Length: 362
Ligand SMILES: Nc1ncnc2c1ncn2[C@@H]1O[C@H](COP(=O)(O)OP(=O)(O)O)[C@@H](O)[C@H]1O
Ligand SMILES: [Mg+2]
Image (tube, rainbow, N blue to C red):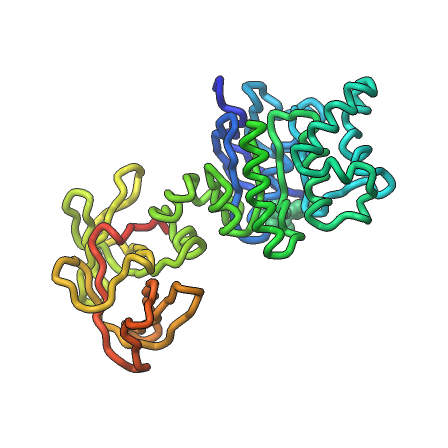
């Protein structure tokens, strides 16, 4: 576990009254990684973060930080710092005093404090505002003070709970870049909780997708995007089409799934214990940007469908087709002016290659 900063083994939390907030959480986080815990509200992200920070007791399992079993240690003995969405700045202290606080508590002498605070304020571009009070700062500036205050004690690990949640869109975009830059420069491990797919995907080296108290998948942004492991991940991340059917046979890494009398070629990852018995009901997922319109002889999968609508998102468009009553496929593409425009009710052939379809766990 030498270069692992955080290890969670079988960590669970059951609150009084029997709420299972976190169930059997297992994860390994390397030194210097930026990890995002991503999932809908109530899935157990904050509880997990608080258990890592020592603000919440674990019901079961073990937590290691930098090789030390911290499961029963108080927050002050964990070498972690925490940053919340609400910033929680001291209103009657200046920026300098806010950032200085934990150094003072530690009894570090004035000159050394000033030096460290100065350095930190420079890093977050707040040095000109050192004497201001929080109420005289913008949201983004307050956020930077909170970050500086959390990092001043040089923790092994910074825990961030929805740190950008209170900021408006453009400020959030800007702060995302700054967070990432600061994290890289300091080389400190960050674990950030968010319900925003975009934040998680653009910031994190490793994404932990959660729902209903359990981990659905751990992987890089690319992995969870390109190879969702479960139905939940396929629905929650990206623009995926999820189909259901019955497994009919298997040939190497390709599984044949029947749906409404038609056979589909689906990729079966061989890295886990997926149940690929014939006759088993199964779901598979195809990314909307891997679907093609128009008949293509080089693609193993094909459906006939009826054009319903188009959703616009800048230069990206998603055409929606109905392929059986109440079942839709989404085809995402960059569209140029010369491209074909569909009429509602028009029939079209939708194709995709075998490797574009991924078998899902339920
Ligand atoms: N102190 C508590 N007492 C009882 N239940 C709690 C407590 N804190 C959180 N929960 C419950 O645990 C579950 C997970 O909550 P939380 O970790 O805050 O989710 P998230 O951060 O993903 O939104 C929710 O059902 C929530 O209501
Ligand atoms: Mg939360």
